[in-house]
Image 1 (cartoon, rainbow, N blue to C red):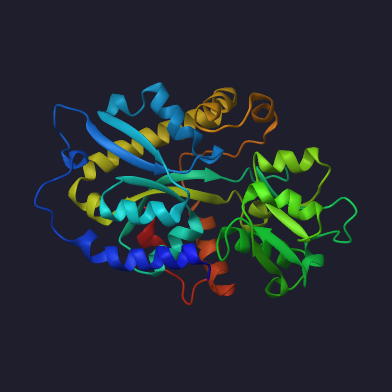
Image 2: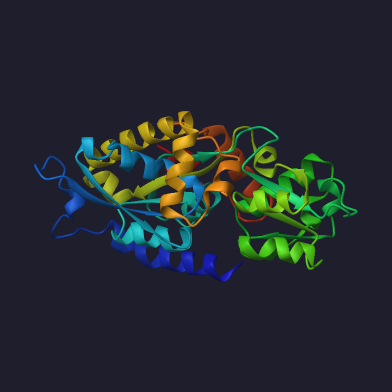
Length: 321
């Protein structure tokens, strides 16, 4: 298991007791009902998936619910989850597999609302790519081959294996190597890997370079897959349910607005990433339904057990709202 995941599990174990303990003074975000807005810090990743929360802040969906929202970017869920448990962040964003792994470690986390979904169609915001002259014609041909993933033993492994299984191949015989998204295209072109799994805007770059798509793996993992969600600590959920309810309402309004206003989504992405406008204009956007696709989370949990990421299926119902 990769080092960031080990670090996450260690941090979760150390923080579980602290997160469940009493605090002598409530944090500013736990003072629901106060005249002053509740100051809320949410941990996010600077990717297009989180565009709705930036758009919702810009549109005043949080401020009208008496929330003064600060968005803090982190490298990934391995940093966000411990920060939420410690109270540094009141809410966080993470992919579904990471949250299921955390739940399996008995981390006191609670999902509050949806984050981002696959389009559910062949034209998705993520995909599995090979070189145009590759002998790999479909996912089953990846048996014995190596696929680049931005992180190991996580949602990419699970999704790619779903594509291989759906195509009639043995998913256990696919190899994965860890490479950041920005490095994957060059690795594929140089022949260091046989396939790459990319999300936007890196997917658009691969298409522009002539790479051939062989699967929309998020689509293969589950229909209309919920890829990621927003969560909080069980401590905050128990101590300040009013704040959690207001944040959830604001997020649901933000998700619905983003889903219906693609042009504004493309604009707001430019405020927190370095993605240039011509690239943003061509990107395939995900879906942002207000509600979690619970069946897809259940399917991911089953797949994580089958793939050996988890030894037993975690309490999915206890994780979701």
